[in-house]
Amino acid sequence: MILRSTIVALCTAAALLAQDYSAKAQAYVESWVRDGQFSGAVLVMKDGQPLVRKGYGLANREWNIPNAPDTKFRLGSITKQFTAAAILQLAEQGKLSIDDPVSKHYPESPAAWEKITIHHLLNHTSGIPSYTAIPDFFQKQSMIRRSPAEIVKLTQDKPLEFDPGAKYAYNNTGYVLLGHIIERLSGQSYDAYLRKHVLDPLGLKDSGYDWNTTVIPRRASGYNPDGAIAPYLDMSLPHAAGSLYATIDDLAKWMHALESGKVVSKDHYAKMTTAYRNNYGYGLMMTKIENHDVIGHGGGINGFNTSLLRAPADNLTVAVLANQAGPAADTIARELAAMYFGKDVKPRALMTEIKLPAEKLDSVAGQYELRPGFVLKVWREGDQLMTQATGQGKLPLQASAEDRFFSRMVGAEIVFQRDAAGNVTSLVLHQGGRQIPGKRIGD
Image 1: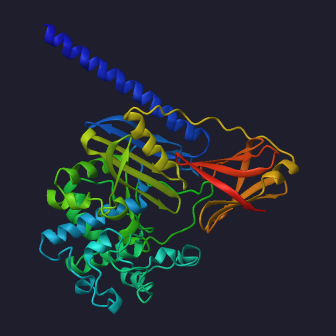
Image 2: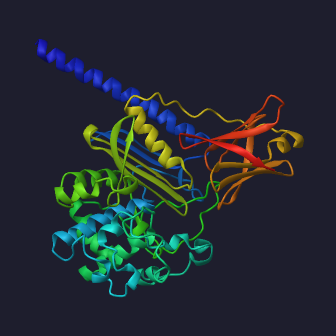
Image 3: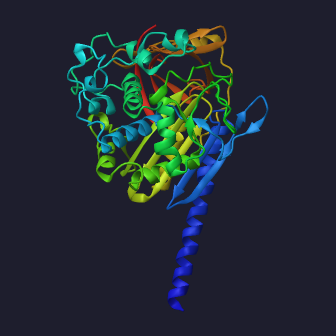
């Protein structure tokens, strides 16, 4: 009788803790929704049971259709772990070795690629230039349908950025090339291979290749941070680097299946989760949150931002899928994990816009160096303060106090700092849980 009472008490305490976490987690997510920073679906799963499983905002703003747990979202680069697993399946079938030179499976390789192996493609150490880094690629070429081979050829004749294996540089061309190799060795399209060998065997019925022309029930539309419909992207272009869609539930099933050896062998899963350069494995990244080991990946693609995290030792999975571009998904996922691990994560403070006179806006205008070669320019246009980072588009800033400004579009806050004479000398950029100082270097 005493033992039964103890068990009941423990179960009750666990249930209360779960309820407390769920309430705090939802309040945190809702603070992002309130500010127009997040629209999507969130899953926090512990020991196979959901602590949070909910949709937020609208899947389609024209028809006023809400997001739900079964809404399908474009994943972006979360796709890469599926591609990596498919390559390792082919290795287990004896069709390739991860130590094979790329030229063995892609004879069109230039001489400069002689030392590049499948391993280098998997962990972004090949040195091949990424096609997504071509200037104005998405602005000028996003509507052009291309085969994987045609995508690879966009940068095939460019010099390597470094010797294979010497450095890490995130590389979408490398993963499209992996997709092309999957197609050559399997005799199937990338889409068909994943369907037959990964998605269907695992029962992932709400996942697949997000072709523009396919009718996909419950698929979310993608939006820019300002609420506009995201620019069109022909989905042949991301291919094996970022073409899939899924639901939060399917992603949780996927992570469990991958970890439990249902997709690739335990040895190959260990290779996927080995931190090579920059803590990147094969399609997965390794990190720590509140001193807990976490694996996962994020994604960003026209109108969508996503994050998938797994803490194996804690049996905790966090999936955040947003149909609104911006940094929200990654920050929300990390903070929900940190909250579970004991961090005191509070809802975002309500930012109320105030109007400042032109002379106040002019007093903070200038150029601020966040790191060598990366400068944040701030200036006034009419009664609006604007900012633009090196290599990025310009954004409006809203004032919440005399020296505090925020951007609803990217979920950031800038605090300007003054010297004793009242002159602005620096700023601190608050974004994604980070605080980045910037010294004023000019007007």
